[in-house]
Amino acid sequence: MAGGSGLTCLSCHAPVLAPDALQALSETDGRRQLTTVSTGKRLDVPVLKDSVHERYGRQVACQVCHGQWSFADHGNHLLRQDSPDYEPWRDLTRQGSSEIETKLAVALSQGGADQELTMVDGVTGRSVPGVWLQAYELRRWEEMNTCLDPQGVLQVCRPILDLHLSFVNRDSEVVFDGVRPVAGTQVMQPYTPHTTGRAGAFYRQRLMRGGIQETGDR
Image (cartoon, rainbow, N blue to C red; front, side, top):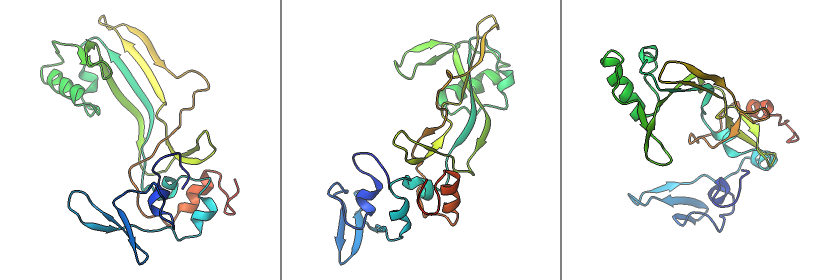
């Protein structure tokens, strides 16, 4: 239930419809519905009734209990490579970037050769020297990681800053290897997974792992 300014889960699901709720929402005889823009279909919108929302709502984000799964990508290794040695990446061609995946496919099919060791800068849109390759130490979806945000609210978190940066130049020389964020950087960062559903049977265990006691006191 906790959230910042603007549209939140409470805007549409609170017992009393909020002024900032979606205009497509309507309520008739205690039944709240959302009219879809594309088809005009009317969908029922559940209203908060369980007392657990009142007990924990100010200290716990909705997705802590209602998120079905979240990313837990530990040990995000990013390698800047200026030399055309792609063979070690034959089993790691899923890179999350269609540009890099295409380059890998072409290079590996040609025995590792690649005429253009460049990639598009996502900020400027310009082609720049070198390519960035990615690999994870551990990828999991089972466990919901949580941490406190700056306001002290328990949020779903992911280790998005668990970074390890390396650089191999055109002469295949290692310029730097496994550089980590500066000391004190909070590796776990709050985020909102788009996996909302019913709260599971073990939501209390999620709260307890986050330091939330059954009474609602941290």
